[in-house]
Length: 259
Ligand code: ADP
Ligand code: MG
Image (tube, rainbow, N blue to C red; front, top):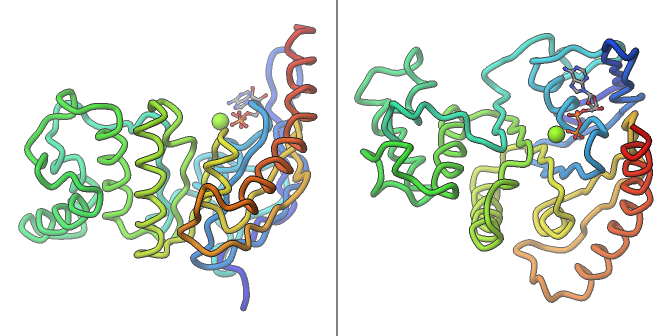
């Protein structure tokens, strides 16, 4: 089976007034169709940059990303990004936000029906007419997820989508996302700071080094889903990843203190 997404030797340096900032150094990763990949690493190691390149919002200095063999050179409907803050339109209702991306694809009635179907999936169908400012943070991220999923993307790019939520809401959404992935089987690249979350969701956890981001280690999570958080294999893997991550975070802190 060949990979759906082939990340090949991606290198990215940003030019700033202080000189070049190496964000990514020679990143290569093959992602299989339907695979759930979690990216973890210290702040500033290029996780968002890699997601943005895969989204076609940013270009690499060298290397390429292929989607089913075709190079990505801009945004496309088969790839959708979910950010930490949903980027929703506050002046539109929940349904209007979800159906927004479908306005050129479907007539009004079909758009409504489809939006409602995806709002049900994130348990928000009772809030279809609410405005975004009336919703809690967790509900907003649910809307953002529904808005991404309604486009039926092959690839979902999620950049710390639950980072702004309280722990309880976050746990709930992590579990919902697992269920959604189980049902829809999109390919997901998911950036997170939470190692526990990555081990709960990921088929593989990819650990980045501190800047410039390189792949330090890939941890396969060969435990059937849904995973029991008390499974000793989960605890063992979390400890392994946290240990490996720790060294990189220390490097990041040392560099920050120098500034
Ligand atoms: P992460 O998401 O892992 O925290 P980022 O991908 O946001 O890391 O950033 C990687 C590095 O590239 C950081 O040092 C960041 O400051 C730098 N960087 C990111 N975007 C830009 C930009 N548009 N211009 C200049 N530097 C940037
Ligand atoms: Mg980031």
